[in-house]
Image (cartoon, rainbow, N blue to C red):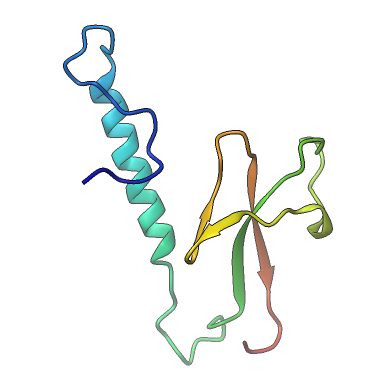
Length: 104
């Protein structure tokens, strides 16, 4: 069963695609990193940091200046599918981290 949103499909047996094995390795590493990020959690319920850090993924406007840190009001909501954020090839994304002072 193919995995959604992994493009373009690789043709392993094609003479024109000599770097197919390298592309497969890069995709596997990317998927492993993605799954590791999805699994981040602090199971220590009495930890001072438990529930204090919020990390989210946002899009950036087309006219953003990469030499400046974007303000939170400049961040764009990304399309979601369930609880998964979708970043299109043409979109630039950024993670936003917020320290929360009260319990959530």
